[in-house]
Length: 274
Image (cartoon, rainbow, N blue to C red; front, side, top):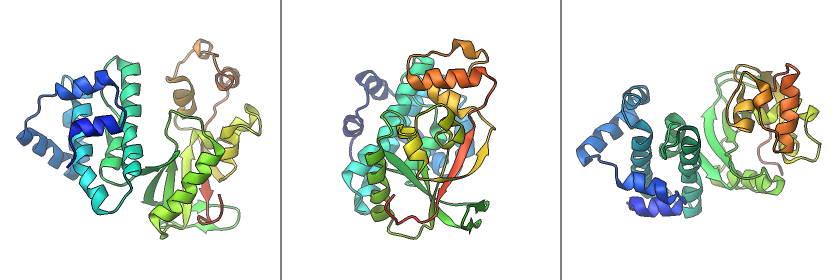
């Protein structure tokens, strides 16, 4: 098992966040009890974690220790070191977001980050891929993807532009990494909302990414676009900043009473040149 200092260095955790981890007071016995709960009853784990007085900082230290432990499993499976580093860089992304929201270096997206610890999600270059079995059929133009189909769920981590060529490389990498067994890619994201075409030029990174998919459904159950574009959801849309072209366009769209929505997209031939 690698040490926590090496983990923090490899995922470029900020120095102030590293200090938080170093100062964590958790005995090995307590760690093992929490770890058992994490793997066996995530709902109860989250409920107990939510009662901790310093829950955000505690979570950062705990997840760094989990990440250190899982390194051996990556090596045993022959997974490249860069995949480990990229996958667990998500801890750094969400640690910085926690600091932005709460002024504390810590974590709160614990279920999501748990997918990486449990080796159910991997970052391959620009994109993340999660093997899942869909529980509802998805109707495309050419065929229905039935419930029970094994697919790769595509996620788009924050932090860097959605470069077209980098995304193409990620899809190609996923073909090699997962070695078949998956009949389609799916993606459930505000980035696939057709309404974005009303705001962005056709050569934008977002629209080019969106056009890889056939968008089969749009839902409006959560203002994900506002959360991702502006970092928060405000009742008064006038208060949103306009410091980027996307923010300016989205603000004007929302102020007209529109909802960006969330698109569900499918690529049902996973091994073509996408």
